[in-house]
Image 1 (cartoon, rainbow, N blue to C red):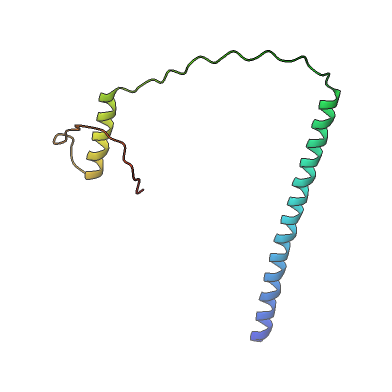
Image 2 (cartoon, rainbow, N blue to C red):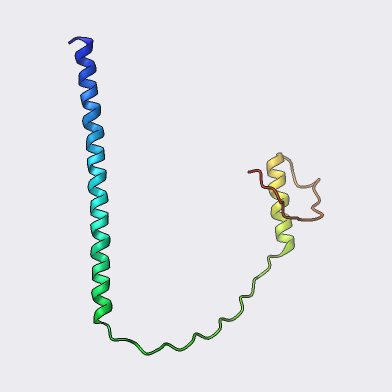
Length: 107
């Protein structure tokens, strides 16, 4: 086989493969669109069969959410351990005096 025949075979294989991929993707799109239309039609039939309900009573106000604050000592221990692990040293020489949220996150 000559080089031109090899090139033409490779080109035809590439075009056939890419063509198959696009055909399958188009088929998947059509199936998804049809499925969504079928589901909407089924939901529409279900809504028509249901009798209109009486007005629902107003929901009661939800209880206020109580946020549990974590123990500051536990937070300090975790931060100290993370700093020590990042620096590759022990926690003996570290003292955490304050914890403030950083304004700029560079990670």
